[in-house]
Image (cartoon, rainbow, N blue to C red; front, side, top):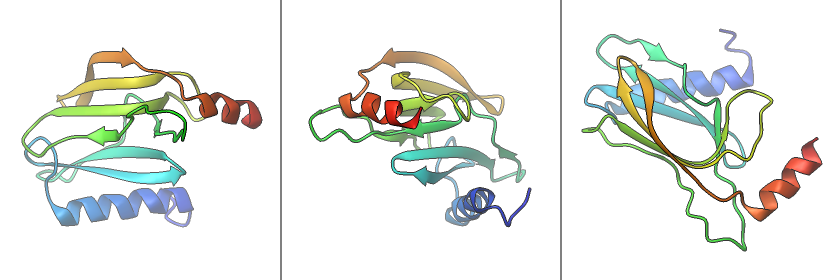
Length: 137
């Protein structure tokens, strides 16, 4: 991994910070997250016992769009040190170029070093999100 690349450096710094703070997820894991722009972030999971870093996630990015006219309560990530549940809410990017209307809440369980989708609840796409997408095409 090229640490001179700013995106890779964000990942490296985030993982180091998560490790320094100790477990925050599922007993002996740390979830590291880093921003990639306004409201957009990504995560990795670090096993604090083995030192292994898991970057393979069910989505590449999560966008928590802000819409001043909407009351959509997307919050990003929710997790606890004594639970294997990850709740992610926002608009999901499944690939580098996929920006889409896959918005809502997704519930994952950490099992065998990967997230397993338990449930997905579709949510509204913020009105200003569609406008932003049209400008990016």
